[in-house]
Amino acid sequence: KQEVTQIPAALSVPEGENLVLNCSFTDSAIYNLQWFRQDPGKGLTSLLLIQSSQREQTSGRLNASLDKSSGRSTLYIAASQPGDSATYLCAVDGNTGKLIFGQGTTLQVKP
Amino acid sequence: GAGVSQSPRYKVAKRGQDVALRCDPISGHVSLFWYQQALGQGPEFLTYFQNEAQLDKSGLPSDRFFAERPEGSVSTLKIQRTQQEDSAVYLCASSLDRDRASFGPGTRLTVT
Image (cartoon, rainbow over all chains, first blue to last red; front, side, top):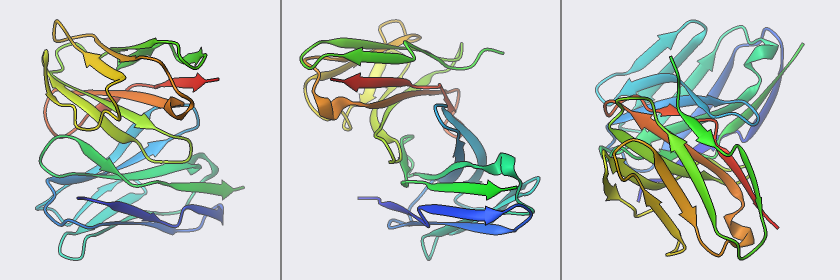
């Protein structure tokens, strides 16, 4: 059974810092991996999707990497801003369509 | 364009009441998913439809939970005889293909 773990559960940084969020999964047979952002009381916004054949994806200040063999992904946020404050969720698709989510990392960026 | 919409956004039910949660997917989206998100947790899969066919209901926690999508568009998640442990945010997502699902804002259910 696929399990997804995110570390740390919460993170507080000063504005301008670069930071890394971690995600690990137990079954390397995945179809893709996504990073989502969730703001309080809101739905999920997909930030980056990495296919199983890819190593990384970039969008603006965000970079996500994928190492299937070790069952790990990282989300790198450069030059963090207060507007980046949210919960970040990692989810894997094991070729069934349904997503298995981690518990999330709640990020606070202080001005 | 319009995204996935869900109604009601908030629902308070007394223990034992039945509730019905609605999801309006993006027009033309074939796949529809329901997830349950408890406070402080990541979403957990409940069920999956491809058009009107319910292909996977392995995540439904008990036979009190029932979902339908009779015409392949709008979907309803029904919970009978609600219990306090059913309190959660219920998220609906739809997609045209396998890769990118769009999520709705969720329905926050509180069972008192």
